[in-house]
Length: 285
Image (tube, rainbow, N blue to C red; front, side, top):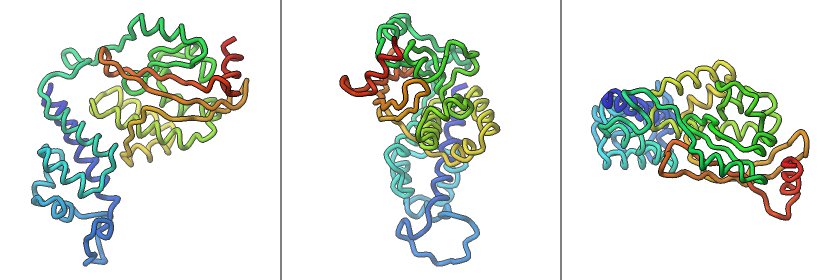
């Protein structure tokens, strides 16, 4: 089982490198363009190999998912392909997972274990009466929420369990589209975050099903997913156009804890003297 998981990570690593290679041209990396009739977009494999000081055959096998690069070679490829910090972290994570030989945490006999939110965490959510709070699990599944989060975002209690996925709601729920003042930016970021979170298990059948469903539901999702952009965002600010109280400007923070590394606590807050804080109190009441 571990070998199969590792192979999936190497395939994703190869596909990711190939996508990034296709976004560069020789002038981007200081190479002269000698052939103006290039048959492929982006850099050639031999050009990437030259920049990374490895053989073309070695790089080809990496890109085909047949070989895991050494850490030294991966660093050279990060520089050659001009990967940013999030992209470099993503490929390092893929390689790290691929080289592990034990069964992944959260699996038993190769089958995903249903995530469970600990009772003290649920109690904490309920005690945050003026702070919209969520717990997200693998694939951004919505595992738990408090009353104010349901009033700010969506009535999670009324949803079928299949619907309880943050990215799915962003792309398929018309009310969620209307809620975010800059929906395209939020949606694109969600895809990049989902791609980054998928590094732990790119062959996850539930992830494949979600990606397939959303690709059919919204062509824009398929386009953004194929671009293989990745991001790990732990904080930020979002502006909502709430149908009841109007504009909400929320600062959000993500917290991860050692007991459940595949779960994230998402807290939303506003300055104590802000209009948003007053409006949250109205919703909470």
